[in-house]
Length: 180
Ligand SMILES: CC(C)(COP(=O)(O)OP(=O)(O)OC[C@H]1O[C@@H](n2cnc3c(N)ncnc32)[C@H](O)[C@@H]1OP(=O)(O)O)[C@@H](O)C(=O)NCCC(=O)NCCS
Image (cartoon, rainbow, N blue to C red; front, side, top):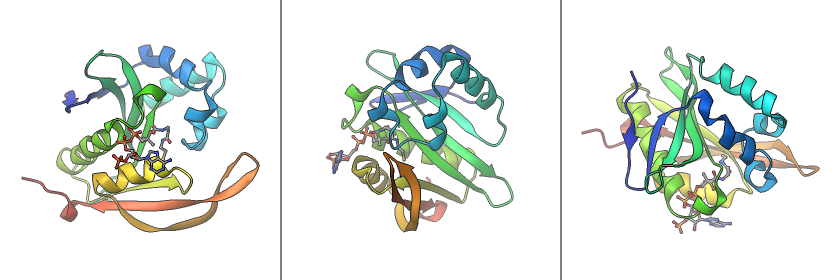
């Protein structure tokens, strides 16, 4: 049973089908989706978003959370861990702050710390990884600040705006996280 996680700026709760309205706004903004998961590049219509949400709320190897602005109570994004492997005690972190006015306020860094903490503490993961476009300087900076380490480069792993570019692989291990 997931209990809401509360930080200083944002809180996290399980995503619900009612959150679809926000996603329908965010996918229309290319600046928001540009460096996001490739699947976001393929969600255009309200029906596609409903289908996607219906699918992810049932996923057993992922945790999908809505990011809530603590001040207004509004849903401003989506974060979580996918590809959770019980055998390897590993998973892949993702984040998407759909409301652009909330960028560069420290929320991405805080949410990353909260989700990583949940992954190590509640899910007992050993390793959490992520991939980020090398053009996504804000994302890279937020992940480094949250404690992720640079692990390697996936050459030409992303195709955006007619060009291939590299993706950076980052990870953090439970031994690098302060669990008290
Ligand atoms: C990437 C994202 C999660 C970052 O979240 P955020 O709340 O904006 O991040 P934070 O405010 O915690 O930290 C961003 C840091 O990057 C810096 N930064 C932002 N844009 C930058 C740029 N173009 N160049 C260099 N640094 C930049 C900020 O100054 C800040 O660092 P500082 O605190 O040392 O000043 C958010 O912008 C987002 O969701 N974007 C759209 C979707 C996306 O890209 N998802 C990630 C896919 S891997």
